Length: 104
Image 1 (cartoon, one colour):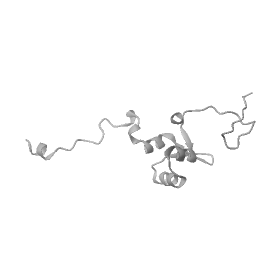
Image 2 (cartoon, rainbow, N blue to C red):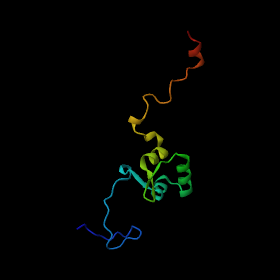
Image 3 (cartoon, helix red, strand yellow):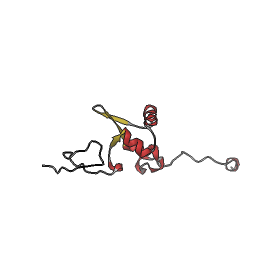
Image 4 (tube, rainbow, N blue to C red):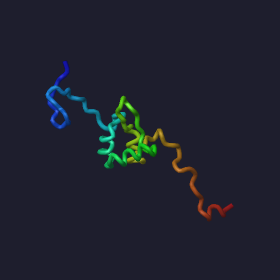
């Protein structure tokens, strides 16, 4: 039988609510819209706008819409994208100055 505890900080928690294992946010695959808003510091209207524009990726689990953590992290901090996902050279070829273009 699983251990039951009162979890007072959880909305709707009762004596019979099982205690959930805490998984660090970055190690999770997805989160709720409200959790994404809290993590990103934006509101639900902005979240749905980002989802509609494709900048924030989601998936459906039953009736629930879940935000994919990878897309949330890329949105908030684009420099923290995993190095394996980056091209070898970012930004394409370097633009040459006029002096370099004029030189033979």
